[in-house]
Amino acid sequence: MERNELLVVGSMAYDDIETAETSGERLLGGSASHFSLAASLAGAVPSIVAVVGDDFAQADLDLLAALPADVDGVVRAPGKTFRWGGRYSKDFLARETLFTELGVFESFSPELSTAQLNSEIVFLANIHPALQREVLNSIASPRFTAMDTMNLWIDITRDDLIDVISRVDLLFINDEEARQLTGENSLVAAGKAILGLGPAHCMLKKGEHGVLLFSGGAVYPFPSFPVEKIVDPTGAGDSFAGGVMGRLACEGCCDTPALRRALLTGTVMGSFAVEGLGVAGLRHRRQLDVRKREEMLRDLLTAPDAD
Amino acid sequence: MERNELLVVGSMAYDDIETAETSGERLLGGSASHFSLAASLAGAVPSIVAVVGDDFAQADLDLLAALPADVDGVVRAPGKTFRWGGRYSKDFLARETLFTELGVFESFSPELSTAQLNSEIVFLANIHPALQREVLNSIASPRFTAMDTMNLWIDITRDDLIDVISRVDLLFINDEEARQLTGENSLVAAGKAILGLGPAHCMLKKGEHGVLLFSGGAVYPFPSFPVEKIVDPTGAGDSFAGGVMGRLACEGCCDTPALRRALLTGTVMGSFAVEGLGVAGLRHRRQLDVRKREEMLRDLLTAPDAD
Image 1 (tube, each protein chain N blue to C red):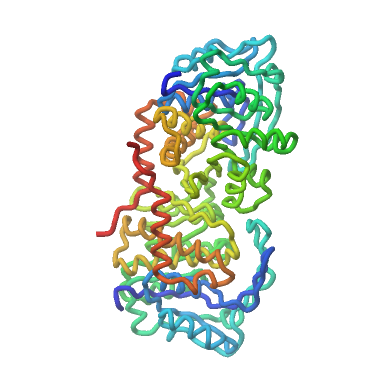
Image 2: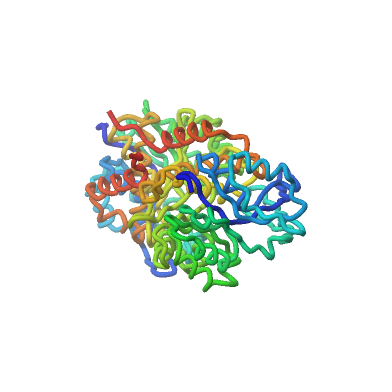
């Protein structure tokens, strides 16, 4: 693969979303969609492995292809595309799932092309840990692998999950999941316990409160970009991961300093993502917008020296 | 007053504290105590205005005097010292007040010496807004004034509170209080609404998630120092304020760049504070410890450039 290419295996979905101020139906969603928009904005070319139903709009596939992204690995199967409906509380601190219709995603079995089997940078979005492991095992010689997960897998298939976590380089996980997985209340202790499971790095996501990066023997705190008005937090975590992994793929380097720089890109993507409904916060952004906000955030974080 | 002196008006108390792992009785506490220990560690000399009862240990006054701090303004009144008892949940996310005995603090009427009336840097810790205003009005020509508050005053004496907020340069407030005061869910919107009340600057405290500084037309996010094991969060906010104000007093400058630098010192003090029971996390620290942790935190926040 080219230096700035990266593999993403995840879901493509249509979301119905309600917030106190807005709502939308059949919005393009799913982890692979949010991730790919962000990775592309970061300058990378995502190669997507996912499944959609026969109801999936060609226009949405075209949108992704034009990022550009490689959508040859998006299989169209007979049946309905994965659908999810959710409603957020006014302060966005609580989310109620209104419905989940797995559709063709229920029998998703990732199939990788020869080029994809030779991927160097790999992101396994939130799917069943057994599928994540299957993909991981099939990649010939990955240089850097990362994964996300969710509370469901911690509940119902903990052993599989811990096994696949032990095989990746970087785990993305949110604060609640990290506490649930490790039994530690302290997020610093939870992150360290996660590194004890095997991965060299962990990005522990705290939503609007930023991220803790555990890497190279240190814990790097990173705040979120101050967003005045959140429109829709759906996909913010996947967009963050897309920014991080996209940046790493472009740099062609995945050590601790590179991961620290990638926090900036991931954080900017997360902030764009929450400013619009569905993928609207990301899809009209350009790489120049990313560079401007990265620079703004870097300036906000660097206090000038005293005279 | 000398360049590194600053006035603090607040409470001195004895606290009974229970956490899942430890407990203590009659621990030196109160906003003025925590603030003064931190301000002193930051290199400043706090001049304290407070009241204690005839049960207050001379050893505790001596401890503060030796910081050094000016304790001539600590009045010993007939009756009991303010006492507070609290119990934290295992994850420190909830705190239950077990008892509050105001004692001599109930009739606290701050009396300032001639030197204190000429204070340039002033911190009004969390006391009744009418008392805060009285102190503020009595200072001849303050150069920089700051205050803290609590939910109780927002509930029962909102107009007085808003009046005194309009007269200070900097408001310290936590996230819940900021939402309650402004009716805004978004913390960025809440901070901006607070500046609309009059103060030039606002430090919006998010506990373990850091701070948002609103100043000079920008919003500066600042993460907390990653603490692995919280022992007791009591007084962390006052210690943060003590670090910030102490640093400002030492620099002799209170503009936006100085406030941004002071975030570092305040954050370090907050992290020391939570690492011990009562004031134990701060009292055995030295200025060298502060400089070391400030340097460590600055390094954690500054990602190296790519080659």
